[in-house]
Image 1: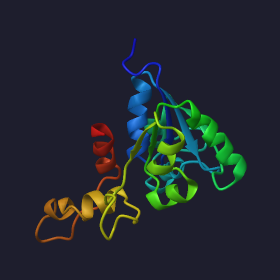
Image 2: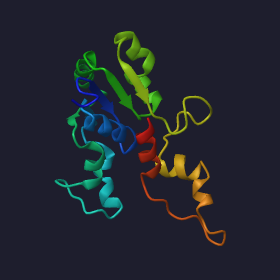
Image 3: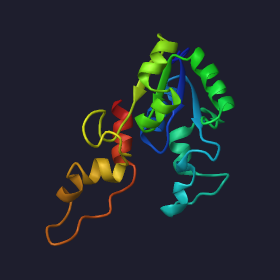
Image 4: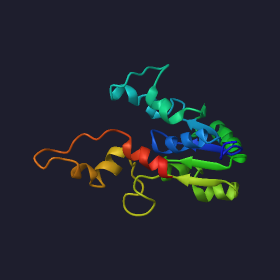
Length: 179
């Protein structure tokens, strides 16, 4: 038996950080249902932009963080999409997201709203800049939040040159492995 067998996890995430966490949960036996926008998680298209061999049928970058999950496309801005999401959440154990918190609040998927409707649901949110302060509502991407704002990018450079282009996803992958 795997350690998370019997748990149902609903993921509303994109790119790497939240999908990386839920990939581990799936590997450890949880049933993970990834909710994507109708066009899919943006990482489905990222491989093309960084010269990875990928196409619509084979995308190693997307598969790396999403294998072992059930996938569903929902338009959460419609009553029908939210109805399906509520049904998924009604018997879930865990909800994880890295969507900006303001957007989640507008959809009623923030902690306060979900806890009222589903008091036993464990909610986790990953945010590039935290939940307080002047940057709390900004989108936090790996290359900006982790590499540039932390100063790591500057520390890795030769003093004679401009900072290097960081490898994508390393900060998000590190985040996913410790959450």
